[in-house]
Figure 1 (cartoon, rainbow, N blue to C red):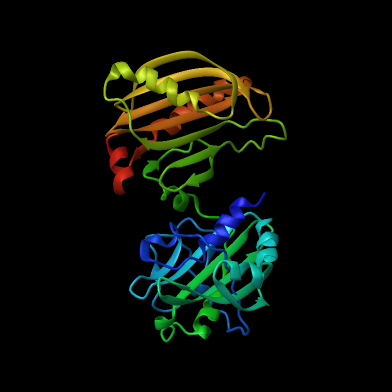
Figure 2 (spheres, one colour):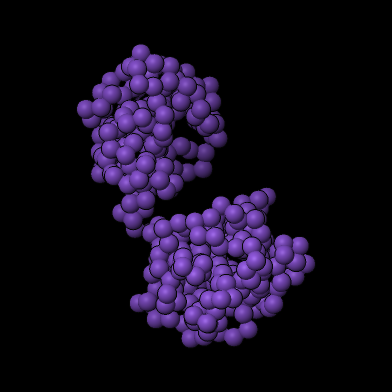
Length: 345
């Protein structure tokens, strides 16, 4: 049930090798502390882009380009911030045992509860040796009604003179949770711009890949809200004659449509670029409600943008022009490889 929690916990306790901090996550270590330092001023707290949680990092740490948090790459010091669903707190609390950590090569030194204005928290301190380097490791796990916050710190022994225990405790004591991530900040994580929300609200962002826009009508249990997913992916046929088959293959991967039936498929131009449209009807897999779906693909630069709009069939007429407005308001953003794909899409 808590596979995601276990993976997340493991991610915070592998030794930090620059960019590979997250890729080499393989150990679960929960860390703690005896004493508390005075919390940092609220004005000192900063939030990584897209994060609900923020902290006042110790002097010497800068925002990381490799993960959500802060780092001193020269000294291999990392402070990683992450959020999980509320139930994760109990699972992490249960797993914070010396026996569990010992099996992962981690020595648990101490564990203590930790004051947290927004809820409850615990903090544990430990050490681990990896690749011939000994690391001091900390993890703060804090719970609110809406999320579980994790802040992990690892410091090589050689860097401890620059990052004292008191400095780390003060930073951890500054943990703050903001009510929401501003819409503009969420959208800045995408390799494309969304200039027109057409009355939708941001339902979720997969950084570098996709955004889900949902209606604000507040559909009740068993109902389907109009929504649209915009995503980018590499790889697309260069020949126009191959695009109908390609679009059908992409559409066939839609996981939440049951008894889907394509009612129209055609090539067209979307904001001046080559594109393709599929119209279909079916049933929502979760509720059984009748839904109508449109998929637009916009090609360019060796990749494609996919727009997938879904609405109850009875509400399709007013939903379709809103989805088109979102589609036509997606522009280019030059950020890295995915941005280059989008630039000509």
